Length: 153
Image (cartoon, rainbow, N blue to C red; front, side, top):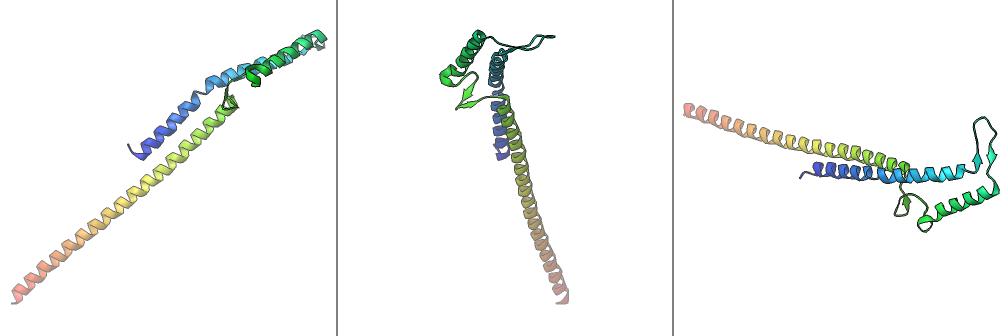
């Protein structure tokens, strides 16, 4: 397999690996929405009425729920973690941008190498053709000189 095909295949597979992280990112986003909803319970705002703070009993329940959410999974909280890194849309999109950038850099580099190799091959062929033309010209000169000497003698 050519190095170009291998590099393209490698970058494509890394793109698929990044794409596979979108599902865990959706889970983490849903967990963040739950945590935000719990935090929003502190203030109750009904349309057309002034906002009301939660009662002390409600605040105690809200704080207990927030503490429970934050202490889940051995103090890791809600969401998907991989190697102590929370998988979020921001992280996945950053990885996707890096992968696309790598694809562009690898493609550009390999194409320039491929073109340089082709240019070298063409230059070598041109040299070989020039040498063949020179050998043919020398052969023609020898024939002409031989004929000239044969007529002179």
